[in-house]
Length: 388
Image (tube, rainbow, N blue to C red; front, side, top):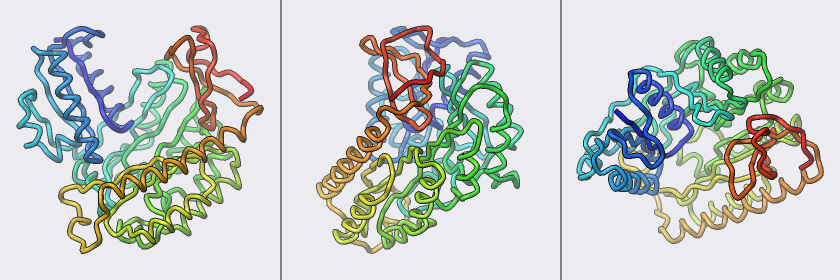
């Protein structure tokens, strides 16, 4: 049977889709080629916002047009949260909605340069706006030795960069009585010429011990992705976040102290209930002054079965949410430009990727600056010292 998997959403989904495809191939099935009609198409969905749900439905419609005779199976977070909505779609043959209650190892190796390695799943935080604990279940993880084995497999298959992924990776060890810092140390002890990036880590779990370790490690890149969500302490309390802006600022200060060149990406949400104009202005002032490299901006959308819908709070109109999103996007643009400009003329090490676009190839430096050069096949999946 010829199979295609269509993946939407986060890096974790891509890791799980890759692992699923490997399992199906091991059972004798084949991957459908480009332009080839598949017998089975699995759509692995995201449901972090209403926009994500819309993209899921568009993808399902497109899959049916391109594979008119295929059996279509929908899985992922959208399938777990809104199975009846998906089942009502004429294109869908089956919905797989059950979330795993145990950890299932996974890593993506579709791009031999980079590997997304799943080290944790689920979340115990239950933020008032979020459905991830419902869709993904409670926090769980494998033992450290199992993660190391998966990383070694990826490296043997040619990966030069490993990105640690999960829903709340700083919570690693919750189910095995281990610690995230001990996982980082074990991975850093693996021999070879490669680097590791840590994906999104909650600020209350990103300890000074972890930051200091990354600064002096062999393999870990000076790159952090930290969810802020709001620059207003009042809104952070409404969201039921586990930190305040003072703690967040201290984390950024410490990173900048020990790794001045680090790339720091920050997740920001706008338009949640209770985000008054005054609180939003406090938020804007805060992120303007924050010495980070880029903002990843999300617009709040109401999600069923979340506690925020039960709160008696002022609702931000949709147009105002969009206006606030544009403001933060503009802040992000100038911050990223300033970060890039500050490294022009400096030496850095780039890992070249395989994608070719209009005669160019691209890669990222250790601190996540995207660079390009004329395409050279011999450079693919190699490190090169360059001047930015």
